[in-house]
Length: 126
Image 1 (cartoon, helix red, strand yellow):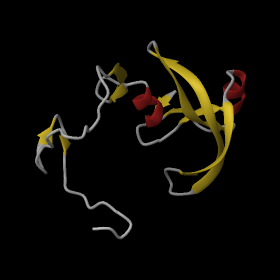
Image 2 (spheres, helix red, strand yellow):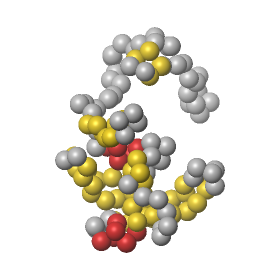
Image 3 (cartoon, rainbow, N blue to C red):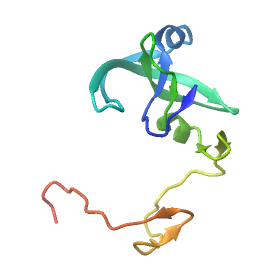
Image 4 (cartoon, one colour):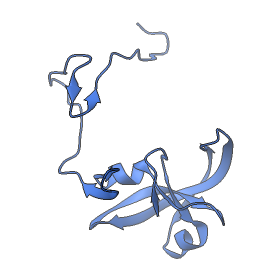
């Protein structure tokens, strides 16, 4: 299965997903790499990778479509892709911004992640 950090959801062949007990939730619109928007069915399936198990959202992949491990599954199982080693690695902890914690300064480098001031769309509110 290809790990695709650009894909939101995990794509599982429909027949396999149904055999494993996936629960269908309905249709979903998906923008694919060539910028087309396609319609697929999606659902939820209990997945286990590296001993970590959780119910995650999946796309019912049609015949001929690539099986993909998407970022929702990776993050939900606290895993990260190591592109240099071409492996998955467990994260030691989840990440969160907690009220009251001091934020780093804009532009500060945090282990390769650079924070920037980005405008938030607040629906016309200041």
